[in-house]
Length: 98
Image 1 (tube, rainbow, N blue to C red):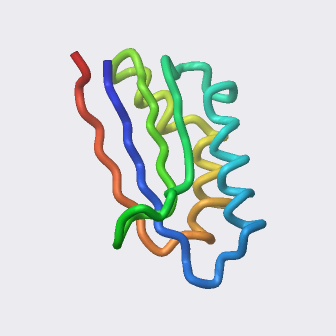
Image 2: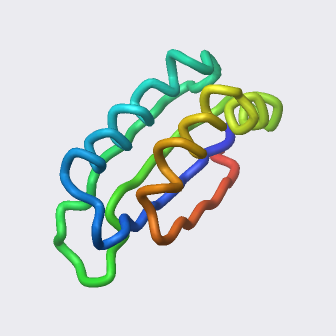
């Protein structure tokens, strides 16, 4: 199993509606791609300094499933049209879960 973790930092000028639009778009990914085993998303609770603002955690069966998720046209569209315009930073990691 591969765990894909992504963190976003929103731009300072992004309002609550734009943040919600990012959340809502990302929430559609499991159904759109059909390849996730588990999926969790959420905004930071503000409990620590310098935290990122939003997290995505997706568990995928294997590398092929991860690549299908990563390259899915709806995923690419959401990144281009919804996420990139709203963020100032992104961090990601994929690792094997045993």
